[in-house]
Structures are given as C-alpha cells and as structure tokens.
Length: 213
Image (cartoon, rainbow, N blue to C red):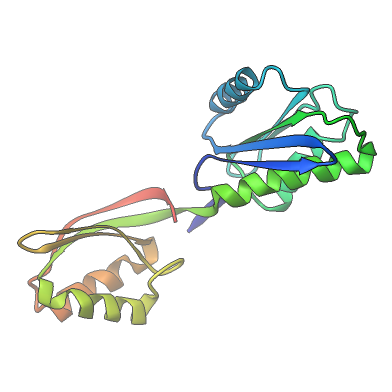
C-alpha cells in the first residue's frame, strides 16, 4: 500500500538564468527538525549568496507546508516552490534554492519560473519514489531454482513497482535473496517458492516494514 511519494536521495542542480546562478538542493526528510537542520547547513555553505530560499512539505498528508522568500519579493520564490512540490504530490522533502544575483532583474513572473524550475531540476536529480508498507522477505534457494523462481514470480505478480523488487542478493552455499513486495503479494511468493522447489526453499524471515520502492 502506497503511503506517500517523496524523493529517493539528496541531490543538487545548478541553473543559470539571465546571468543569475541558481543552485537548488533537495533532500528527503522525516521531521521539521531534520528539514531545518538541512536548511541551516545550506545557508551556512552559501552564506555569501544573494538569497537562500527554503521550502518544505512534511507529513503523509502534506500537513506541514512552509517556505520563506528570504528577501525576494513576496510570493515569488518560496511559496511557488511549495505549490510545485504539492502539485507533484510529494512530501517529506526540503528544498533550498540559492541565488547569486547576476545583475539582471527577472520580474515577478520570471522569479517564479526561475525558482520553481530550479527546484524541479533538483527533484528530478534526486529521483521520485513511493514509500509503501511492504513485506520484506528473506529467502534461501538452490542455485538451480533461482532463474525459474524469478521468471515465475515476475509472471505472477510483476518484477517491479507493484510486484516485487530483489533488494539484496548474496551467493553462498545457497542463494540468499531479500525480496520487497506489497503485503498482499506475500502469500503468492511463499507459494511459488514452496511449489517450485518442492519445499527446499527456506523463508528465513518475513516482516512488515515501510520502505522506498
């Protein structure tokens, strides 16, 4: 079950618009304290910049939405970034767009476009992912059954997205795999492993957890 969408990892992108340099940093966060620490870190790193515009959206229902224009004309930078994040249906994300003024004024519309496009580049670099309640299964299986298991599981429930993902795989005396799958597919995977291998596959663990998929 998808709980919400966020970004996969921290990322940054640089964008030059009318001689102004925009540096956008985005990071996934779990709390306001974590978001504020990230904002402080970026502001300290670029303390000589003309502006450091922060924005955050937090909570599985986007309950917290906050931004600052950091000296830009009101409503031209922070708030549009928040609207863009909400429009992309993302949460638990913080963005700081740093601007080094290049001497050319962009106007109200130009500022909105510059800040939102810069923030979007950082989001794209970070990668959008789904946070889901999933089942994390560790399976031990004989080498001879590995490829057939993958094929049967993919044919039955799909091998990515709403199906399953092989998160880790180790090769030893047997193959050890950790599969991440939506909770509703747990029993299907158990059945495939048991039937295919005549019971020789071992389900080492099966836990409900929340993961980025």
